[in-house]
Image 1: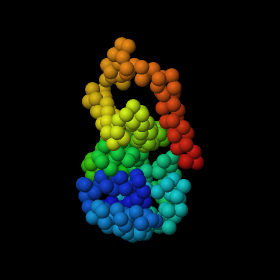
Image 2: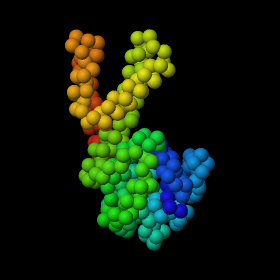
Image 3: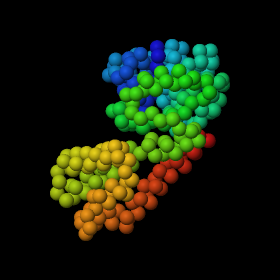
Image 4: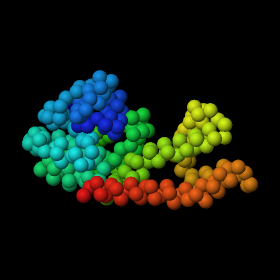
Length: 261
């Protein structure tokens, strides 16, 4: 079996869904009924943790940071004997900590994915230890191409990436809901307000990604002198919108640092 997933929560499930569009050589496992339902949905195998450790060549560790040590403890001997590639997505946990939990030097890739991975629009910064060969990395990246953007990043910056792109969907959903609420307050039907807000966010992001024009210039292009848009922007500035957005990323970064202790 090529890939195994230990843990199938929101993030593990998102990657499994994307990866399954490339290969069905996948097994999944977790402590709840989610993995069994996901296996049926994707047409992949459902196994227990020990079987994944014994049979899979590449294993995604998709459990919470505080659960990682106890999850790996009963698998240590099997992992040390087989030396599969481990792919960890636990916020705050460094590669060296995963190696310490396993008790041996194994090939490890650390990723910080986000939930849009499930629809092929994810952001996945990654780093690896010295046992991950270029050939191994290239093959893994080819399999992961359905996930979205995979970008190499120094490990010292992974917690910052997690605070921005990993947690970012939650911030944007909050903004999406708030914008739609504003539309409803002005008389739009709820369903239309949600769709309009979502498409506006997606379209604005696409313009930036295609042009790489500074967001300030893109904002200025929408704001006519004395117009309604600049009136709305003024309110956001008065309420400290930019400061709040910066602070939320910084707060998530600080929490990631705590999780690794």
